[in-house]
Amino acid sequence: MSTERLVDLLPNTATPEALHIMRLSLLDWLACGRAGTSEPVARAMRNMAQAEAGAPHATPFGGGQLPARATALVNGATSHALDYDDTHFAHIGHPSVAVVSAALAVGEWTNASMNDVVLAALNGCELSIRTGVLLGRAHYQIGFHQTATAGAFGAAYAAALLLHKSPEHHHVALSLASTRAAGLKSQFGTMGKPYNAGIAASNGVEAAILAASLTAADHPFEGPNGFLQTHHADGTWDQPDGWMMRSVSHKFHACCHGLHASLEAMAQLDVTADRIREITVFTHPSWLTVCNLANPSTALEAKFSYAQVLAMAALGYDTADLSSYTDHVTQDPKVCALRERVVVKADETLSETATRIVILQEGIEPTHSHHDIAQALATDTNTLRVRKKAAVLIGQNKADNGWSLLSSPNTSASEFATLLI
Image (cartoon, rainbow, N blue to C red; front, side, top):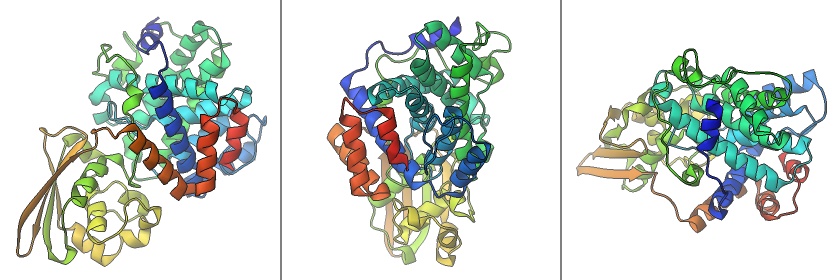
């Protein structure tokens, strides 16, 4: 089976470093989801799932009990509602929202320990990232949303690891996921984007459940009509050794991760908004179809606009603060006037994680700045920043409690899930 080949890409042993980064991503997922519980898309998903009711398997953000598949749908969408969750740039996707949402729902349903959930999530996120690399840039550039497509495979694998001991069932789950995985970049800037993450999580749980009773294609990826051919894949099976999840990037600005390098570069310069004549942003061409909305009018659209976030930063708005992203701020005449002076240009010599900025100000020589967010933070620094971010989003006590539960060997999935309420 080609699914065996996909699983064979995964490292054999979970290292302490990889498990630590997965626990950080679980805390980040918890904080983003809990903070996003009142978002319209979160309420819509929760209301639909609760109206359908069903077996009380697991806990959605906001409370109650739902079937595992419905819980994964709600929690996938909710944790991505703020677009503040982790990103992996090897495939430009958000691994945790799909995979953790599936793993925790199934873990709670099966009375698993959090250690088991963390390990399943780590393997699922890793498979999601490596599937995304296999799909390649052509898949993403033509319009597929990697968080949803590659994410469905990671969610299916994580759920299958918690549901089944047999590798055969794991392979069937991945094969079934190949016929369910879906999601388009056309939804960026709307509630359809976080819905994509929920779809991936739900599809993964569904595929894992059905793996025990359905047959599926032996070669779902390769060959005629396989996922790789039909979804414009141009990646390679030859991928790095070790855990790629170690280089996952956590967000410290509440907007699309493609904008973060430009904001970090902007922060290095001394800027006076009233004197700005022009801000020129040089970025990799891949971002032009993702986060280059020139004239956003809503808070959601603002999170996908170089012009908007750089204008906000120049005017003193805190781009890490969720309250900075409102329809009112997006339509503020001062912000609108300044974003008209932002010019975005493609530069193929830049990596996908780097941005270069040139700012022209009245009476001052042009100033230049460059930043690459691929530059890894030290483990201690990253841990402190993620825990600080979690405390800002959900309060110090809940953030500390979440980290304590994730660090304890005796925590159950059900105990951790109480923090979602």
